[in-house]
Image 1: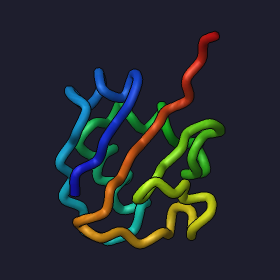
Image 2: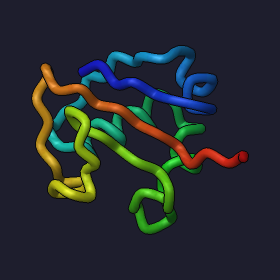
Image 3: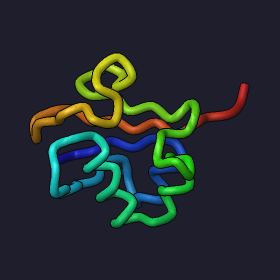
Image 4: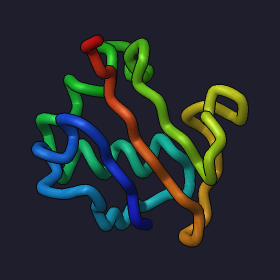
Length: 90
């Protein structure tokens, strides 16, 4: 699955798009594999309780997963997956 990453996650992941081959078909499976690939991303996106940090957003085909099944949202290889970290500034 191609995952688009934004802001500081680009630096961590080495680019705008990352190829992720997860063992499952849910958002959490993709994110867990990304943490395995890029351990530094863990503290950027997850709380200690393994929930997304406030202001971290995942979009599947343009829809925020909070309006779907959150981290349990199922994804297909053809879906557009975008991961946005918290962004500060003005």
